[in-house]
Image (cartoon, rainbow, N blue to C red; front, top):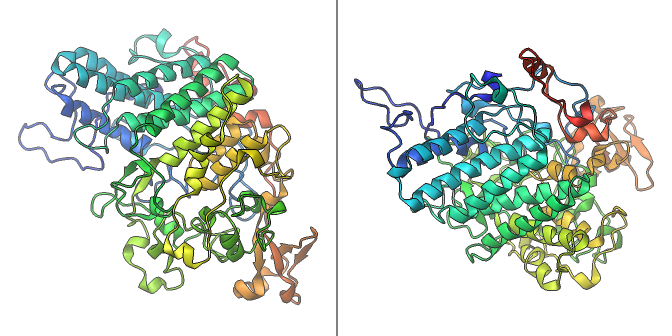
Length: 620
């Protein structure tokens, strides 16, 4: 257990810096020496905190690493088809081991728990934050009161973030508020604490952090600051508030967390620092996000220091896990109505070019407007690269190197204003519907959803005939025949807005889990999760007229009938594309799918010391 809970006082490397060469006995300048000679001033605490950034604020990460990255990392949800053949299954048996062995020199190189959008059984980051808190108390005299409070806020923020990730995976987890003495078996091998208790501590940490951290640290918004913390607090509290509600845990906590979600969001909203006044594509494809009005915090990339590969997977060549027809159907038409009752011409045409023209502008800015076979579903995302980067899909020889391999330089938005707006409006709607909160007004809608819908269009979108989506009107909410009967029309539209806004980003799996809607990932119940858009193969994908696709290539007609290519019916291969050789994921227990079990080895590790580690409730 020692190796799982104790991340030995870790070397804090500067972001992506390499180790300096020793010169005689001079201490290395990019290393933390845990003694009174190190903890001298704010610069030392800042150096110690930087190692958190790569794991918690990693943006597009680096190289080909997939930990917590959009497009390539967040691919386990009902939005995305995982590939040809059987769909990826949920964890169905208790694994032998889930703990992470923490090497103090490789704390950056851990593997995340993708199926839960959270952490594996690893308390190394918790310990690192607790060590920082402990050292702040020890060396408080070296800092001004304001500096002490700021760095304590930073440490508590990262501890809150670490626990949020653990709770996403396991629910109940042991809570540690100080570094654990390895000789204290009772503390090291304590059983889980209730998730409500843990999230109450997260709540307190975030409250303190928002109230005490700087608006700018060291003159820069690229260090942890009040607005970054408030924006992420909004995310965490919306998640847990709705989880407590829909999983029938605690109405009191649900209300408390949702109120804090609104409060944290308002810190950002009332600052006057952010707006949705630039086009959607600019958020993801820009080489420099400095000063972007919608970006609260971003990761900057530059050749020779840090590059990534996410833009390469939007260049039209690299293979993608594509989005499903189920997801495509959720995009609203530009008259503000679902396609089933829209008055927009060709609203029921699911050809990619027509979807780009008739749907909310975020569709055109997220996908190529034609089918591409390099996506498993023919719907290929171009969201995470620049407009220039998308222009080389059929001229690879002319493509600049920064759009290929792991040399991508576009900056990554870590947290952006639109999420804060959508968190706020959802929290207020939940409070209004269930906890006697004040009613939603048209002004609330105008200041959140309609602000987002009013983003300007870039010239390429205008040239394609893309139009802004009509504003959402509280007095005439869309009547979506696909709406779940247990979700109000307003909440349904708020959820739709999130789905359109965050395609391939961090939200979808956690959203359907917190709403207790994991059933959406049941391919048999929702068969559109195995299909792509409408494709005219003879016209748009003629390369599939090959013997290797005989008996495999299948399309679905509007009446639900399927036609499979038999070598002689090529001209009839027009319809909703059925992903090649697709099969539904295995049946899964809905309740077990929400939370991960802990591993056999972790439980045995406790038992070997006459201690008990409880298994996750649904897995007992």
